[in-house]
Length: 121
Ligand SMILES: [Zn+2]
Image (cartoon, rainbow, N blue to C red):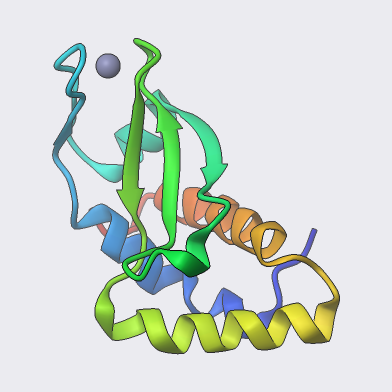
């Protein structure tokens, strides 16, 4: 599934915001993910929060640590949050796809970018 062009433009920013939150430690088993790339490779993607619109901070990604605990990373910050959700709302109307659908595709693109050798980390 293709990501609309205007949402695609957020992928590098969102990737950088995610990458800036590392190293990150699992609260349950103590496993340390040194960088975003290690996290993408070493954890299981559980998708996004279904009620992201109700949660002012966020696009939040949910992932499972190999120990089975859920680890969340916040993928937006205050600077891009407002404009991001405006674009998302418009793309939902234009494409007829759900916001959650579009966010999942966006997160897949973020994962792919994180795995490129020259991505921010
Ligand atoms: Zn763990």
